[in-house]
Amino acid sequence: MNLIISTCGTSVLTNLADESTRKLVNQYANEHDLSTIPSEHQQALKDLIQKAKEKLLQSDIKTAKRASAELNGILSISKDQTPLDQKDVYVLIHTDTQLGTDAAKLIQAKLESYGVIPQLEPAESLTTRSRQSFDKGLRHLVDWAARTLPGYRANKYHIIFNLVGGFKSVQGFMQTLGMFYADEIVYIFESGSELLRIPRLPVDLNSAAQEIMRAHARLFRRLAVLGPQPDEENLHNIPESMLERVDDLVDLSPWGKLIWEAFRPELYSQRLLDSPSDRIRFETSFEKDVRNLPKDRYAILNERIDDLMMCLENQVRLDRLDIKPLKNKDAFWPSTHEADAWADADCRRIFFHYESGVAELDRLIPALH
Image (tube, rainbow, N blue to C red; front, side, top):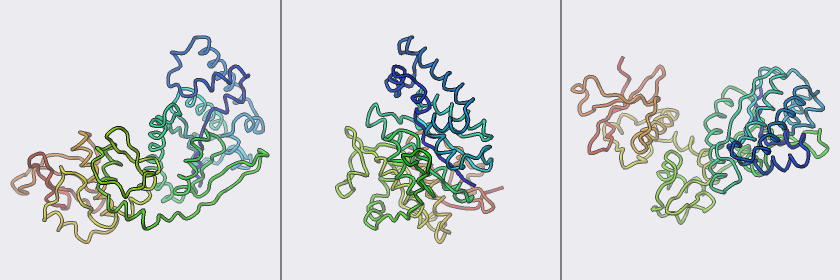
């Protein structure tokens, strides 16, 4: 089984456009709403999209590959065999601009004619209009990859990054992302038909990078979970490539986000990490309860504490925490509330109470039924 992730650009539109309409595609590539552009430009682009849809759906394999770089890669992976294997999963990563979405939907429709139902994954803010917006879009891709791809690997999928299509500015970052998450990265030789396959290479984060993230784990956790933070901590020994500053705030750069997400599972599985928030404290009884947990439980517990931090500091309610008041507070004094730690056969819940706006974590005990 394969998971084939394809970066999408607008080649399916530009390859079928005349020179004047191609200029319009490039001119409005970063627009999220085309209703504000001149009406004659709107009509020209609507006509192009309709023309591309009709031609693409009627095209044979050879013509489809010429019309779309993305389809060229996907069909080359399948050795031009259709219908495509329904056991494989197809994901189309595209910008959330109007034309980027329209182009991805055209490719989706053509793939559906080959017997599969591709997933569309819009990369929010991934436009070249500003560096800040572009970096935000890259961080979204890292979040998506870290949240999604380990599950496919655990289920024995072979993960392929198809980088034949898409914008060059995105392809470079996706190649680096693929070094961490893909089993192979696929390009097409200039001849237009032969696949270039780059196998997965082992990525070893050097000890210096790991020590930096360990030493500043609290900051990295807060940036990854809460977003930009005041630039107050002594950051002189963190490489500039891992952070970016805007006014008085500091945030993880796309590269910093990628490296942190690659290292986080190992770090989180080692022990109960120090509290990432001034609004969360661990009582001695809680620290005693969590001694000698298995690695996978430490990883989940640290993630739940991140979730609690988000609830307390960003006022975000997360269903997976399932925070609620205790029904029998006297029996579990001083605890007044409980939250899920994990909910499998060995269910555990976190018991805690509030003191001056701080969540004091009292116990980690089996869930009450």
